[in-house]
Length: 212
Image 1 (cartoon, rainbow, N blue to C red):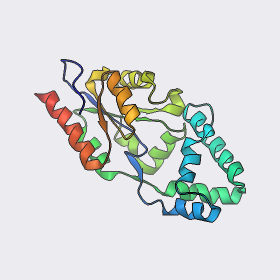
Image 2 (image 1 turned 90 degrees about the horizontal axis):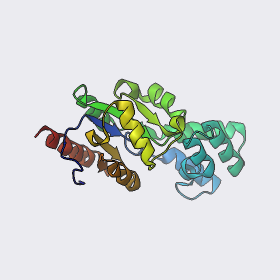
Image 3 (image 1 turned 60 degrees about the vertical axis):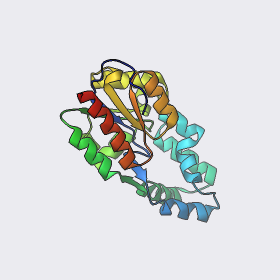
């Protein structure tokens, strides 16, 4: 755990990342099936969907999810029917981290809860329709909507502002070390997600300190 950066230890909000934290790809068999069929190395589809130049543009609101998949289709030379099936299989690997979602639900109404994610602008509709996360979290800050992305310090300030709290009143949970360091730099308490049990335990420590 990082050192407290202010004498005011009060925590009012807990902020969660989406991909790799609240939404996880536990069984990647459908993606691996396509990679084997197309002669791609393992995890190459994830890189094309999230790590390509087009994907990075989409996460900053300069392209759409449709642009990303069109770019993937061109890269892999796939037709429209193949892409429809690939996209369906790709997203079928995503599942809700139920234990962490229940933890977030139990925090309310004492604490505010929020999502901060580097994601396409279509992510809000997807997580609302597929996982009903709008019932658990207050604001959802999606990089593709606000045109800022972690680890840019401005998106952490924006998130705190949207919640209505100061940065030092927030705990932030993310699986990327660079994002945690940036959050800590603006005053947030950072918990780097390794697994669900560990992340909940570390977050709870901050909440307990806040009550002392």
